[in-house]
Length: 478
Image 1 (tube, rainbow, N blue to C red):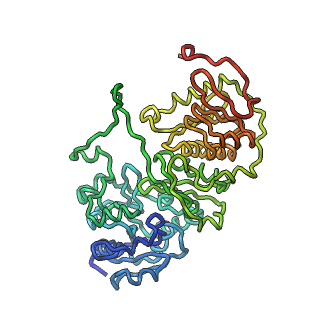
Image 2: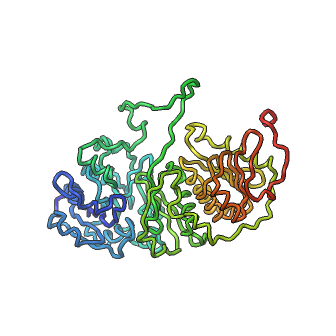
Image 3: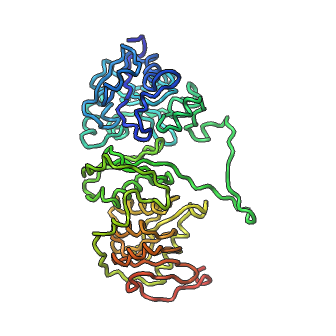
């Protein structure tokens, strides 16, 4: 015990370190393990410290002080909220500091600042441009009943608790007074991030540019020679998808509408089927994680299945293959659509695809019903854009079985498989359709059209759904 604040620091070390590949909490940083480094930092300010883990035997050689309690999760692998519930039940103090075991630059001054901000709240959490930072926050033990109740619903993220209790939000920028670079909030999730910590690289700023007016910033743009028209750059990040806390896949994606992408991906892979069983999709933008919670069971083999980092295009579907088209029921649909309407939907998509116009490096997908686009989604990967679109439709219960799928990108076999699984009867692209995609579309009853531009289009399969009608030329459409 120290003479610190009446707080029990709970270092949550129950994660599986999937992106690191090994238990990151035991990796050495400056001569001590990562978890010991965090324990040392919180020990300077908190009266008591405990480490909550699913594998206490792994911490025997972690170099922890004898005064630090190692507590086993009440129920293993219940995510951060499960770890907090265990800490709240075991804490000898009225307040618990929940902190991740992979925060090598944690400053005791930040903890003191949170303590001073607590007022009459039950939770004190820093909040920045990317949302709350629940893994460096204070929790009153009075929230234990609410935390247990939320955990019983299957939700395992700390933010799921916030709507049930009184919360004080501390602007992240205000903590620069005690931590100028906000280094306390840096996590180590990948080998690259570990290397930066070991090399003493400066942590990336977490706040918006407006919160750092003292820092010079350089705007980078791409200028097209000849036109001199500035363009932004397409954004992509690795995003890891979880179903009931089981890792499903990691994809390279544009970091927008990620909850929709995760749901659409899992629906296409057959992991989500019962809309009534779906509970939530929560995004951790800072760490690039999406947690989908459902009453449906995770397939047993998914726990041990090899995960792939998809490329954004080309190897877009992690588990789907040509074989996934076998066994799918043929689509029987009475939908009929005029060729002029298909062409108009392609034009609507071009006008709605703002990111594509800005960067020139994005793909867009649209869902058309009764001649109008009802959903448009964009991503650096065309299959990601489709997952986002289908995910939004599934969440909002928008029917797709009599709709038209429109895309700016090439339709390859995995796009055709996704459309077939979603039971979309008509697919049209302004660019190419691969031979394998056309073969799958033909077998499964999908009308597939490509090269919808320049006043014409090519219908490759099931043309009986397309009613020939005059397509207005470019001048008429202006």
